[in-house]
Image (cartoon, rainbow, N blue to C red; front, side, top):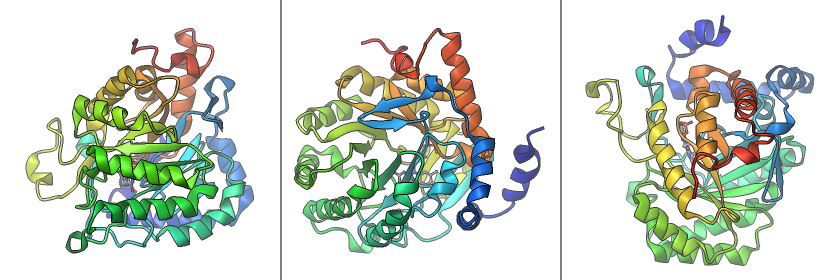
Amino acid sequence: MNFYKTLLKPLLFRFDPEWIHDRLIGWGGVMEHFPPLLKVMSRFYGFTDPRLETRLLGVRFPNPVGLAAGFDKNGRIVPFLAALGFGFIEIGSVSFDPSEGNPKPRLFRLPLDEAVVVHYGLPNEGALRIHARLRRVYPEVPVPLGVNLVNTNRGPERLPRSYGEIVDDYVQSARLLKDTADYLCLNLSCPNTEAGKDFFLQKDPMRDLLSAMEEIRLPCPLFLKVSPAGGVVGIETLLEVVDSFSIVSGFVFNLPRGKPDNLKTPAWVWEAWPGAVSGRPVREIANSWIREMYRRMDRNRYVIIGTGGIFSAEDAYEKIKLGASLVQILTSLPYEGPGLVKRINRGLARLLERDGFRRLSEAIGAGNPA
Ligand SMILES: Cc1cc2nc3c(=O)[nH]c(=O)nc-3n(C[C@H](O)[C@H](O)[C@H](O)COP(=O)(O)O)c2cc1C
């Protein structure tokens, strides 16, 4: 019997999703005061297999299953999350100034679809505060830590005056946080804020941002979390610009705006909810972006982090075979429970063995020939 799915989940799902998430962050913070408890957790939830270990861009990942940005926005429970068996953790999105995000309610469940509608609008405590927190925990974190950066959301009534202002916001945060992360990821396309509206699909803003980032001399790899809205042309345009900036090491795709047309939940349930859909319904579409990006990018240079609708080892493996070197999960966690990371990793080891791969790296892109 799966204790989480039969007993705990029905109870948790009676509460407002954001409220319960905030409580969980609080409990995780309390647990961190008891290191022996984290050790027990990590023994229970961890899964070690040398075949899953990868070294990418100078960083050692004990397994390829990471936590996506948006769960621990303020980096408050990184050691607790590491004890759940993740191979890496991405915190954020963090903006230079603190932000309240969008008005509540802003997170809604679609249980029939195993999805959520998310309209957070990037609430976070701001780079200064998060930097102070990370300086305390960062050296101790047992797995790689990614920090996801975004432009401050000041609400629709205070949009940035120019894209120079947006670029400055990213640059200031990156300057501050670059030494407390194993990689930085610039979230260039939040689907739920006015200021994040597919702005970096244009070449000039992207060039200006990357030129400014180049000047900082980052000590760690830089990923771009980009909008899928431009389709194949968008991917080609992105590569055209990014290819000449050697600081960029890889890509993640953000959620598409609006609601996909494959939802099982009737429209009357969700049509009044603003926001983007994550979870099972976006798996296929996210796979198609990975497929197209991998076909076009320089495989010796870039790394893809695959995310979107991963609920099982098979889902993760599918993204890896399409070209993702690492994967991230988020929405499946509340649906499947904390044992999911271990199940995915154990299943991945089995799938590698079934297909005769000695290491994970041999499987990357194996289903997506040039
Ligand atoms: C509740 C929630 C909050 C999120 N917040 C962020 C965020 O702050 N920054 C970001 O880059 N992505 C954010 N995302 C997107 C996730 O990082 C991830 O790319 C997306 O949810 C797809 O993965 P999933 O289907 O496993 O959830 C958020 C997603 C959810 C569901």
